[in-house]
Image (cartoon, rainbow, N blue to C red):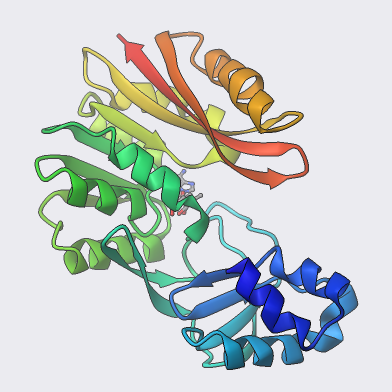
Length: 282
Ligand SMILES: C[S@@+](CC[C@H](N)C(=O)[O-])C[C@H]1O[C@@H](n2cnc3c(N)ncnc32)[C@H](O)[C@@H]1O
């Protein structure tokens, strides 16, 4: 998609300005979200119109108006052109997701990781997804492994509502159990000791939730997918050194083995999102 956008923008902007826009282009269903540098603010409308005219599947264009922030990890968006609505449908790995780009977290940039984790889930597993959002990991897992059950926790009521809708849309509502609550509370009150596998996709606050994640695992232990942000000089060091070290420190109080560390994506200059697959023996 960035390549296509580069061509689209070539008609309306000088090459250097165009490159600043296309590096931060996301399309979620029929909604396009762009990041416009301050220096190009006056060309926002022209850029959005060019996208609508050239990207056939785009019906609306919004501009990022803040960083991702707050407990719900959402960003403010400014409507620029097309249809002024924030709800759309996104398709990934044979699943359909109803998404509200303004009211619940969603990123199309995590699809490879969602597929990787789904590929690790075994028959009859119980999974606790501590930060489920609109149910992306939960539903892809439940679709892939017909005998598993996934508790999908999120404190954002809009995300939880969309997760319920998405479980229905994908015919996995019998095995995706939505829980609208703080993850720590939900585990303490109803999910302690139930899980073979725990997913922790809240990298900004990973360390705070390690204790509850381990508490959710069954008595014999299980696997935790620990997402975190680490600083490193390059992707390889993020994986082999910073990521593995961060996970080892986070799980030091437990009997654990860091089985695999994966770099999910670069999230800033020399800052990487990693996920460590941590095997815990209780
Ligand atoms: C980075 S998003 C990940 C969403 C989803 N897993 C995905 O990849 O699309 C983190 C999610 O955690 C939720 N969240 C933040 N703090 C939470 C908490 N204490 N307990 C439960 N959910 C929380 C947010 O509402 C948000 O939907």
